[in-house]
Length: 376
Image (cartoon, rainbow, N blue to C red; front, side):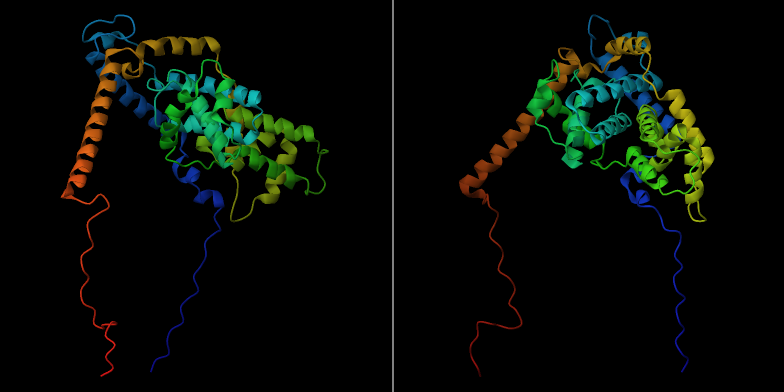
């Protein structure tokens, strides 16, 4: 009889970082080309849909008459949408400063707002409203008025820094609780309920602790180096860096801008056969931070916002015929649902059915009758 063959031991590949198992790595990372394609496709679809709605609506804001009038409108491009969203990314920082929210809430709210506009257009949802809901949602886990408000509210929840809705809206002019609540579910749905975010500022803190163990550093470590690097991480939030690169790469690029010699020493100590960080990628991120990590020009934003008022989805404009028609349709469907529910309850009460369910059918006779106490 032949001896059984021994199975060869399974060969293990290189150990993958935990980040690679995250939803951020799987669903929210793109190439620059892929990111442009996502935004471009969404913008084209939004323009086509809004054009049809404007054609069906006889009036948009003032009087843009007759079918075919949408051909005279200058719709926003994908790049112009990004410019407008970028302005409200800076507003999140201002709001977090006013509420004294921690770094985690600010970074999470910004990420939520960026992700929201990979699935939606500013021509449907103005970033002013979405912003607030995103921030307030980001603090528990770790309308035409303010999408950023909703994003910020969501961020307070998910970042374990809860704040009451009343307190939140009381400090924001012309905002009531319903403005935030109306959009909170929409924001969460657009994020695919994937609230966990891996941030570059956390990775930067890890690098800062690690470099203190390096021997014979060329320069003396000072906390000013860390704060300078953190400023570059914050600047990176105004770019697409987090949608393309991993948090440690962004953190190292920021640290390299603050202390290039120390960053180089640290990188040499960490590069191994299994995991190597490409210096060219770090240089690319540094260039991105320096060239785009600043607020947009106000005049450019004003022009985009002015045109947005003319090409906004009429279904989102209170008072327009498209808006009133949509509300009427929603009310009709809700009334049908209520009537259907009431009808089913009446049938149940009339004996045509039990509201708690029908009686269970008698089970089949078992092979053993446990009620039989005959010992014969």
